[in-house]
Image 1 (cartoon, rainbow, N blue to C red):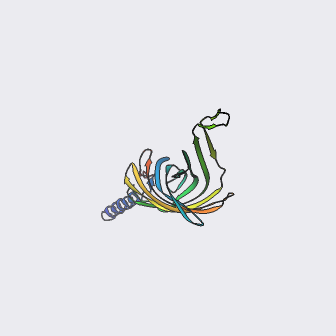
Image 2: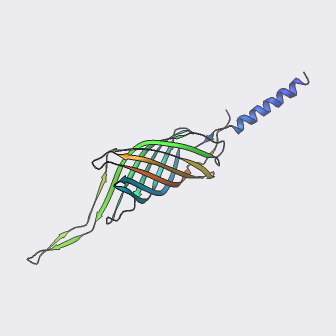
Image 3: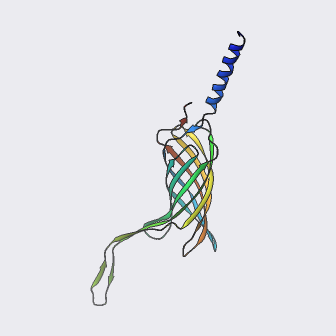
Length: 201
């Protein structure tokens, strides 16, 4: 009995240490972030544009999340904002024991396009000497869900309060001007509350 008790205690300690090391990463309910990169369309050639935009991640669990992201395009079409929005499911395939580990993931979802145009005032002279004034105005448009998107990437913790993200993927636009596109992005995510290991229960 004098031998069995110390051995049993040692086994229990080693077991609990192993469980502690294997704790899954606990992520907060919400992460906010931003991303930048390029977005391209494949049609009569390949057309690429720089893009930048925000991202909101709602974590259902350490492995499952819903994301809303917007990619604003740099276009030469007068004052305005144009881009695509994505509503996607994110599945993390491996959850490391701490925030500094690499977390691979894949995404699948849908989306659409948006536009906001600001048209300045302009004047058109008439032959009789009068001038027609068209006042400045703006207009916005948000399309229905007409995009199917998929992708993948990885995240890595920079600190307990920020992580670096790289991702890429493709999408198909089902609209009057249907086309195939792709995205390549890098970004930063900020967890509200920080990353930490889940407590042992």
